[in-house]
Image 1 (spheres, rainbow over the protein chains, first blue to last red):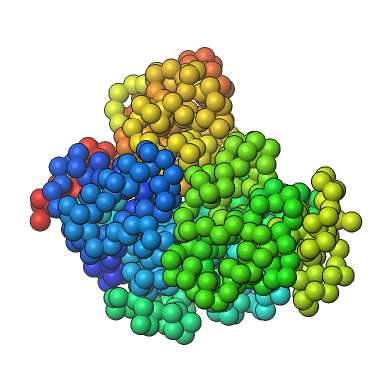
Image 2 (image 1 turned 90 degrees about the vertical axis):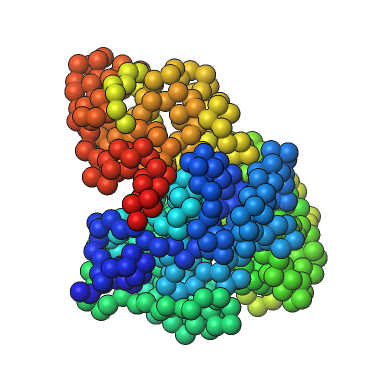
Length: 448
Length: 167
């Protein structure tokens, strides 16, 4: 029977020859994970239910990343509970501040997830690992408690939707633009309960970092998972890194897709999702009248080395607009080290940006850049719901690192071309970007 | 999920996300009592004060979209909400509602017919929703068999325990 790669992975984990959409299976998990927000509730449930042992201390990852370094006393208590539980049960993959990173950047980087795995995470962006050709999905704390105790979870086999992008992406267009474009087309429940498979020559041309960004946001279309067929780029990333044995699955040519979408990669512009839904998209170039107060570059969506390089490419030799705060957050310690080694921090500091330790922090209005009432941010994160980054009267515009960096310079939403980034220092483009902006009077930021 | 529930309807639109149900800034807490105080805070800061035990949330499509926080159904329960009726639920919220014992029903007709403040009774076992204000009756979609099994086992963790014991 022909199957999609998602069906093949779940059949393998359920010990079945084949599965079909709608089947319910109990699957063996290769890894389960929780963070400082979700693990506490999971540990409570685990203990309340009377479980004594975890199924395998090497297949559980407990990653304090959301409100860390601890932002307040209650958050410190949540991490303390994780730490104590980890010590008691000998959890191998508990990482504290100084060793930890934003979970969905950190676990692939450390080789803890890999192709063919089934991963259940008490975090909705667990779908990120689909970029490796894994089945990975978010669930709640009780599901994590059950997974920690038994190593199993129930899944309904999802129908698969195929999203094909053929052609060549434009300059500065990245995985973030592809996924925002997709969500804009299908809506925030356009893939509800479905596996979202991304394919086509434009997807195959992408780096792993950009692929992680795409699969990361599958949940923002309601998807159960995102997935990309492993290829040479995947293999190069996995080799020497993944601690398990990779299992490379691809979809059969005659497998059944419930829906197939085909778009031309050449036609995808630099995208922005406006408040208050990730589906509320518009090309960045059309939004120059949106003045901003803050820019955040980081998160499980766009806090990887490629993202920081893209931001630095735009910021080199320029300054952040005087009315804007730019916060750059490398997602893991290793990314931090690499960015430092490559001199990217020199660029950020010269541009007058702040660089933080790894944390989810501002993405969910936790700390390290909370917005006041009426403030507006451009952020490379994944959600722009009401109050997501702070006051319910604040606004979040989602974009990729190129647009975020260009907007930080311009003081309003802008593309790199609009601030004259192409061809360094040409200074002839519209907008009040670059060092000149330092003299721009307050309230006169739009395009000149 | 048994018994007949009785309460007033609080109506919401589509795509009610988990940041609206319980804003992330309150996720440094985890008990129903604490979280209940901030339920729906960014949609209506007074919701938790106005809602009475037994009241019913009625919403359109994709209720509970966004984060995996189990704090969302816990907050609804903590605020006193007895059941959520919607046209559809986001996937993780759906799982979490069963896992935390918050009853949820899919009933598109009821959602279209019920107005804010209507007095409702809900028979969870049969899925019958009565709007006492308008006199109309609606039928919710039956639970999928597996979800019924989970409910009968007393929730996910008892189910997994029984399964492990049977091996």
